[in-house]
Amino acid sequence: MVDQLRHTMATQLINNGADIVAIQELLGHSKIEQTMRYSKLSGQKARKDYYQAMEKIAPSGSEPPTVDVPPIRN
Image 1 (cartoon, rainbow, N blue to C red):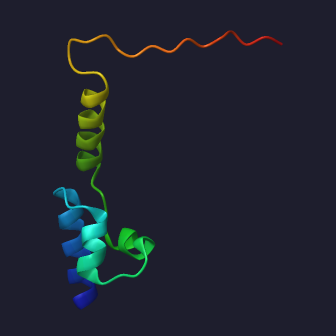
Image 2: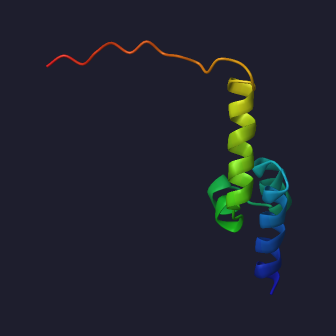
């Protein structure tokens, strides 16, 4: 029962914006990998984080970043 509560708490925290290192501290884990097993990132949170990051890279109305890639020669 306690393990399930810890999983639920970690999942709720990560999906509401808590830092994984802060969750690690709260759970008393010595390794971040253990904390990552406890927390499940929702698809909705992953999408939100992706779009927020992309907005910082290329704000609405701005030109998307371009990269000059040389042609591949055989």
